[in-house]
Image (cartoon, rainbow, N blue to C red; front, side, top):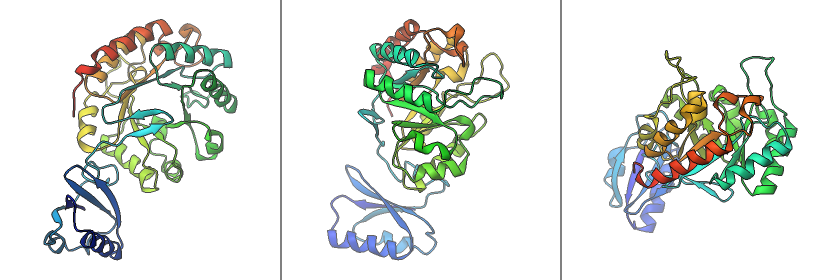
Amino acid sequence: MVVVVKKNPDKTQFNNLQNWLKSLGVSIHTSEGENSIVLGLVGDTTSVDIDLIRSLEIVEDVKRIQEPYKNANRKFHPKDSVITVENVHFGNGTFNIIAGPCSVESEEQVISIAEQVKKSGATMLRGGAFKPRTSPYAFQGLGASGIEYLLKAKEATGLPIVSEIMEFSQLPLFDDVDLIQVGARNMQNFELLKELGRIKKPILLKRGLANTIQELLMSVEYIMAGGNENVILCERGIRTFENATRNTLDISIIPVLKKQTHLPIVIDPSHACGISYFVKPLAMAATAAGADGLMIEVHNDPQHALCDGAQSLTPQVFDEVAKSCFAIRPLACKY
């Protein structure tokens, strides 16, 4: 349920309203806009008398929320949320590119790539230390050493780092990781999401390979219900009947999410197509559609990459892609 309170309400009446609502056993999420204050009521609202609230002088309107997700709902939080990762801001008109190798292979490799993508305008460095692979015989990542190398790359370049967590027992290893990524395969690992809801560190949540947008938002709700509101959504392509590309990039998710949630959305064109040739047009399309950022895989030697070399760009090609996206960003769709 949402209670819309008029601008500059009487303080005594406003406090009495909040205290009464809390006495009914519901929690209140407050969002202040230019012309009103939105009180989002979370919990069992069956005992809340809508007509009584609507009759109050300070109340402009009362609405019931039909969607099962509450904290992530734009009706609860009309203004765009801005998620801050170190000195980088996502949301409300900002645009960032996260770039780096699919997998951290060595200290020298990740530092070199970090230096090059930063020159091209990347504001964050990505790199997998733990890698979920379809085959148990494929390279699984360097583990703790991979995170150590990422931190050295951060020290050398100043770029905040993002890396994927596999299970909540790994959380201590991610103390110094600036943005924790939850991969597509873990989108509905609810125990992991609950644990991430108990920390305040920003989370990048990727959509599952065959999940609906509502299921993505319900996974977000697991994190936010635990108290962590620092969530960035990521579309990385979904599995369809088409096999010309690795996955199918759902570009329509950008306007849909912009309407349904206040959280920023990042697009990963690398995993969406699985082929480096297609990364540039998909990145440009996502930029034009109004995405808050991109996540692109970059490798100094894609042909010999230990993971996902086919979809990785060389630093030189990444530079071209970044320039193209920054050039069209001023013309991007506004919501």
